[in-house]
Amino acid sequence: MNTINNSRRNFIKSAGALAVGTTLPISLVELAFAESSQNFTFAYISDSHIQHIKDNRFVRNWDRGLIRAVAETNLLVPKPDFVMFGGDLAQLGSKPELDHGAQILSALHGDVHHVMGEHDYYLDLGEYWEKLFGPQYYSFDHKGVHFVVLNSIKTYDDWTFKRWPTAEQRMLEMAGLDNPNGSPFMVGDEQRLWLKNDLDKVSKDTPVVVFSHSPLQKIYKGWNFWTEDAEQVQALLKPFKKVSVIYGHVHQIQYNQIGNISFNSVMATAWPWPYPQSYAQAEQYLPKLTVPMNRADPFFERDATGWQFINMANGNADLNFTLYDNTSRVVRYNQKQKRPEDVVYQNEKARIVPQTHY
Amino acid sequence: MSTYQKTTLALCLAFATAGSALADEFTDADIQRWQQQFMEVASEGRELWTSPKLGTNGVACAQCHPNAANTHPETYPKFQKQLGKVVPLWQMINWCLKNPLEGQPLAADDPKMTALQAYVTYERRGIKLEPGKH
Image 1 (cartoon, one colour):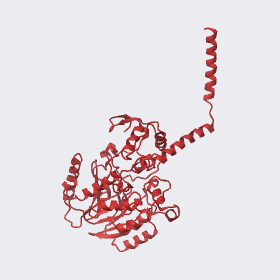
Image 2 (cartoon, one colour; image 1 turned 90 degrees about the vertical axis):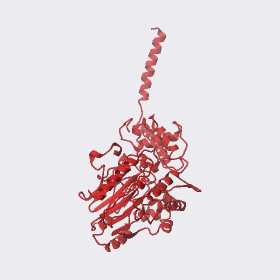
Image 3 (cartoon, rainbow over the protein chains, first blue to last red; image 1 turned 135 degrees about the vertical axis):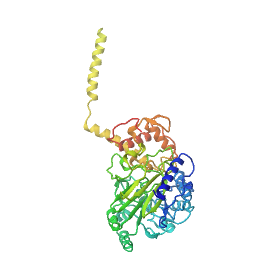
Image 4 (spheres, each protein chain N blue to C red; image 1 turned 135 degrees about the horizontal axis):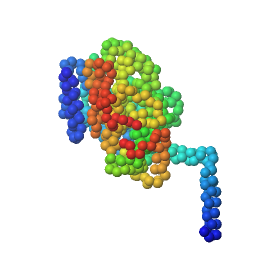
């Protein structure tokens, strides 16, 4: 058993024990990393859905989720190399919402990289967001890993440009998760061409991590747990040895392995979503590999929300979920099985009753 | 039995027979009309479910419950451990109106409450009843 595994085990124990108390678990835990200087962590906060009421009033519940994630992320030891924000900072893409969200995020120590969500985009097609956070898609390299950020929540031009009389209505129509007037997400031709050119310059041995808002796999179309051109994006990632896709949008734990690509979702700080299987009328394809998060207890306002830090050991993404009012979870890449697995609950016999969704 | 009693009995039987025959008679058109009545109320419920105006903070039921998922109407009435007693669905809906929506509760027979329940139940159609299930 190496240092990493030992420290992880201790971390899980400590986090479990502390969950009953009110102390922030992270501040008390030191993670010892393997000798390799290439190993590093980054934090991931997503889906805060900052919602403007009017004047200077915002929905308190969603504000609290983001404020807490920021405060806890700042307490991480060792410090993460950077922080990702996974999209849907705002609820209806307005300036007051994006500004208020940016202000809360400004308390974070260190670099923050942003992913575009549909709730940030469909009012002005990302114009104000770009002013605050930069380009809608880009890539960067960090300690031997190539990171790519895509805007995966675009859709058919007809829907975006011709269907709605006002930008406000377009935003509202896309904001309703279960709205039949919505439209499937996609990366689109332009970005896929850019991605191809970007990846052409990268050695096939380099670990690649792709951040998107929507899953770059097809799970349930009705709620846009879906990317229309997922297969085409996956094909561009296929030649690489180690690929991880990390996405937001779904407000729940999901993970999967398709060929060489590991998929992991991240939690929302705002509110949890049901698994598609609990919508009785739905045909859906939740990955068999996924052990669901616990069913949410609405009486604990922050239950089934949270944030995560991600350890890039050996070029694979290991997700450590910090779940408010609930036991933390770790989904780690299993080198032998070549897929992400929950370190506690993966075995059928290890599952617990609240993980049953109906 | 007096003549009066006999007459009354005969009349009652006659009414009973005639009454039940009439009550049993309804047509496809009736069924369609009743179904339509239900669907109108269910779609009013869907409007309310997605409305930012049901509460006071702009939050809609559908934000956390797309297609009314995770509401489990088929399990009510049930022991709601957080309330410490067995409650019908409408009491849980009122809990949501008061808390995440920061709004006012509705009366049990408020047409809006009927509509919300009609919608939630409609989305769960085909699922077997499991009262009390957690």
